[in-house]
Amino acid sequence: MTPNQNVPGATAYMDEIRSILDQIVATQTAAIDAAASAVVETLAQDGLIYLFGTGHSHMVAEEIFYRAGHLARAVPILEETLMMHLNATEATYLEREQGRAKTILDQYPVAAGDLLVVASNGGRNAVPIEMVLEAKSRGL
Image (tube, rainbow, N blue to C red):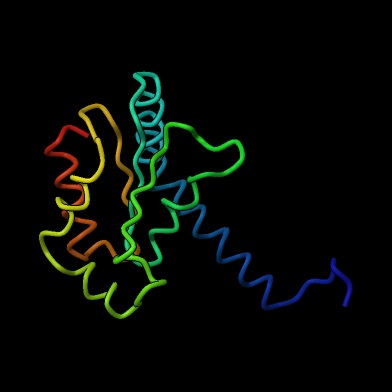
């Protein structure tokens, strides 16, 4: 098989990806622009950008951390008990437990004017939701 040969499965996959991207452009451009503006404004005011996620979503926070040419004002919030490498089953239960977000955020010198990005695959577990609410209450 040559690299340029069309494979029906791959073609269908790429068509679906294009469709999803078209949907994102049609429905999320304003939200993406607002997020980009928040990042620019935070950096212009010397604020920090914190990133957080639980389970596999923690990798979004880890992705920006300690890379060649990385964004120096980016701070990952990496809570090991909520990541998969120690105990995946326990992490799954802990990310659903109410009241953990405040304790985690208390470990970081967040300040009004900083920005917090929270990644959540499902958008319904307690810790990511409470992390957003706690950050808002602190002026992030």
